[in-house]
Image 1 (tube, rainbow, N blue to C red):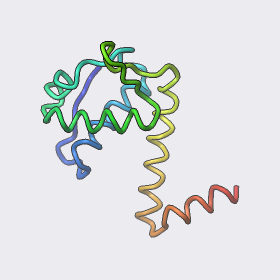
Image 2: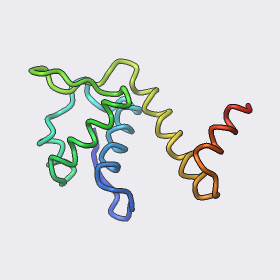
Image 3: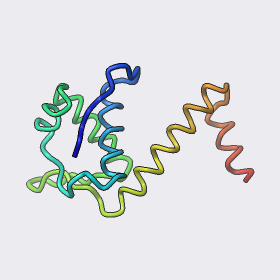
Image 4: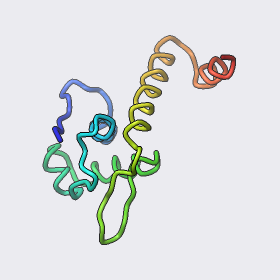
Length: 112
């Protein structure tokens, strides 16, 4: 699993880490059981708290499962969901750049 952050990315670090992990899950390159937050922090060269925040975000999206004593696991089928979430985020960013609100975007989707 290749983990790297783009130096010129303006997003907060936790969002960049979550995005990199989301891509790895979508591509199928993430292992079933993820490394520890400390190991991921070392791989990304960021603070472990940054990684923990990203992992919690992915858990809340339904991509990861936290189990005491068993570590952090990728939920089966999460790859497709992660890919879709990435595309949705990109769509929301494009809509915001074009001057549309999230409510406008939701209305457009519902009208389809």
